Amino acid sequence: MSREPIDDKAAAGGRPPASLARAAGEGEAARDAGGGVSEIAAGAGVREASTIASPASLARAAGAEGAARDARAGVREPARLPLSVVVTTLDNAATLERCLASVYWADEIVVLDSGSQDATLDIARAHGARICVEPFKGYGAQKQAAIDKANHDWVLLLDADESLGARAREVIGRALTAPAVAGYRLPRREQMFWTFQHAWSWTNAHLRLFDRRRCRMNDVPVHAAPQTDGPTRTLRGADFVHHGEPDIETKVGKINAYSTGLVADKLRRRQRFLGVRMLFYPPLFFVRQYVFKRYFLNGWAGFISAATGAFYVFLKYAKVYEARRAKRAAQDRD
Image (tube, rainbow, N blue to C red; front, side, top):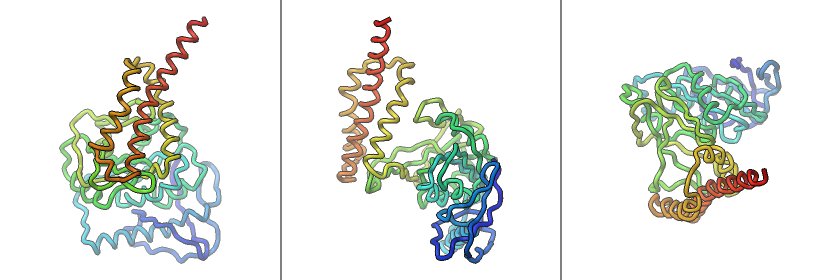
């Protein structure tokens, strides 16, 4: 679905969002805020924009402010290859603003939505994103479809509940001046309920910055990830933050949904020694997270995160065991 121009205005007395849209580096001033309700294109029809999604004029002004702040701080972008940022969405209004604000400097933002009913598309438009809408095809297939829509060869793949850290722009810019690898892994810092990962605890690095001509999403259910045909390396300093687990309830809900989503794949691969895995892997996982990855530095949040992670690896194999028993029982009845 193509993006159409927006002529939004903030409701009088309303609070503009903390948008840092990239579109405004061209020196365009924000329009005066006034009353009224904006109209934006949505599919084949037109609907009124929610007042919680602020106007494109304010997004442009915020982008100009971001560019000015970079200039005051002496931030100079090196001559680099153009970059497309790709995000898939479904009702992500709570986190998308932060995500897109962190990449306002990118050459292109592509948002592939699968039917959001909240303000997700309003936020994406305010940040100058090119928006497409397609039904959800599965985690890997949906992300691959979004990657294929990028205009530039180098892609930064983010989830809607992720955002780049303060130094990432500079580090990524240097890496893209003359990339000698097929992709780069970026360290991800996790939200741990009421806090964020301690700076000295271990962060996992994920392949998120890559040449899309040399990379495809794999078909692993739930945890689909990009795979390249060449070497990769980790970009230290280009951290990004995962804002996906603000409380224990959300964490446990994901654990339950993800472990169920993995059952069919594990059955197909005929994983062995399920009893041994259920007995020994969870405690080993806890020790690895809490001690060797230094989650103890995060206090009780780190302890709970390691414990729920151990429960997740237990649940993955317990559900496979249950499914196998059910299958054998059905065969015996036949």
